[in-house]
Image 1 (cartoon, one colour):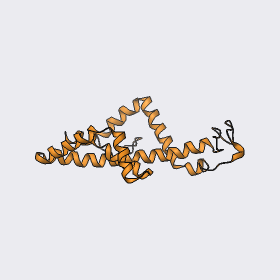
Image 2 (tube, rainbow, N blue to C red):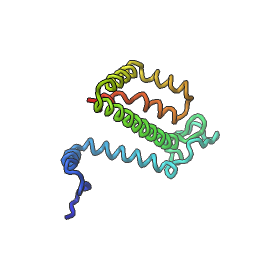
Image 3 (cartoon, one colour):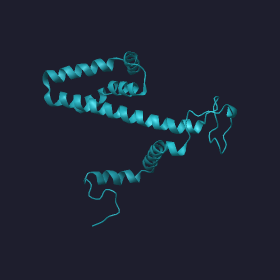
Image 4 (cartoon, rainbow, N blue to C red):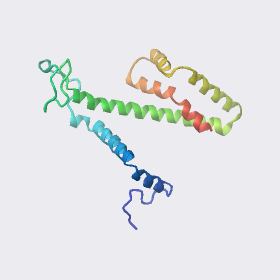
Length: 170
């Protein structure tokens, strides 16, 4: 039996959620926008030129067909920088959220399942990490390991797990 539903054979608990989601036009627009940004990031090599390519003869040009958003003070295409920047931003977000969820779910599940002294230890660790301002904690971690995009991803992921762990523990 074939239905015109993308969730045919899916978990029965998912169908009512999708049914309600389809009713909200703003949510559908947001989903389409996120999908569009992901596609732009994936297709960056096809859509735009290299973001570092510069031409000193084309400094601070206004938007045109050749340069959709114009050029900057070094003659680089602003549209290319925007498209390639979307790729970096989405990858940083994906890695940091994944790392946050992995650490938070693991520690929260340990604390909630075993309880006792392990629960107390993990709960105190969560409270200690929450006490420090996240920005300064990230800067401190980067001072020790050095600045790079991968270290930034790890530092943000390592400092953001506390709320996930508290939720998982409960």
